[in-house]
Image: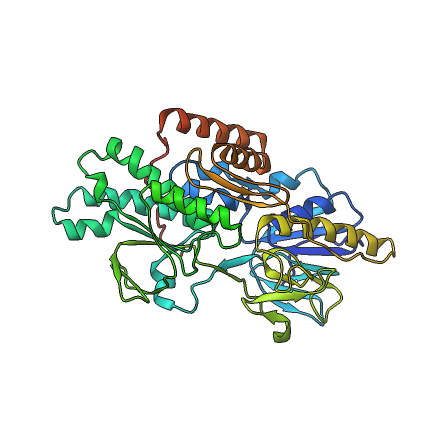
Length: 429
């Protein structure tokens, strides 16, 4: 099979699969080191996942929350990037099979993240809209605006409800933030853009299988998030599971149903599968079991970091939270350990430092849990804005996002409500 065209420099090669928070951070930390670093990703950009919902709600342009990977590494001569998908690992030959060809490695780092977990329901996986990529956020934006346009021409009340009512499944940070943004769109945008529609007809449902929202955060954060959403008019159903969705009706385990053409699925994630890894290293949720050095169990030259990695610590016996902070901390620590290997020194075990978690529920409403303090309300919202703005890559992106946020806050108006659909090109002969 053809090899990927990469220079043979005599340097030991570290291949990183995935350009998300974990893979991107590791590649940056290994730039200008004695290693040859090869970054593989199916996209040519890094995505800032915490703001997907703002793209979906027409608050931000997708270009504001993505950053070209080639631009990020163009000044580093030891870092090479290829757009491709990895299909299989050959552990004995230390090779990856990709859509471009074979790629050899001395060290392999899996940072392939996770995908939406539909819990085995194939029909829901085909009809619901997940929120794990910029393209899915754009799909939701198009569908939401397109359905409002269709609703204008539907005289029948029940049929119209299917187009204007929205169901969100999952009461974690993504579900809560999407629900809050939709509720604000209902109050501030619909009366302006669609005066012929009765905004009070629009219902937003948040379905949560657990007994509380934001179950990974404090009880106070959960309670406040519930109060904020309730004040915004979101209809919350706790201890309720969605069992089926046929494109028209959402059915739940309590026997009730909701008519809706849109179901936003934010109910969980599952590790991205990759062929070639031993079955015994895969744990619940298809995560890869690793030791405290991020080495895949039973291997010496393969590492896993981020959402895909399941590392047991005393405080985290089932693995770390699948969020950006553990991914970035693991990446930074692994970079130090790989440099230790290069110098012939022993690696040091990783320990996760919880820096806190937060979620926003519309303007002036957020919940923040820090290790030493917990707070909610307007100040929490400002902290949320500052933290996310600081983490965005690129000065231009930071500036554009800041301007959009200020404009939206002053005018109560998102300015990006465009239905932009990709043109489907005929196949090449």
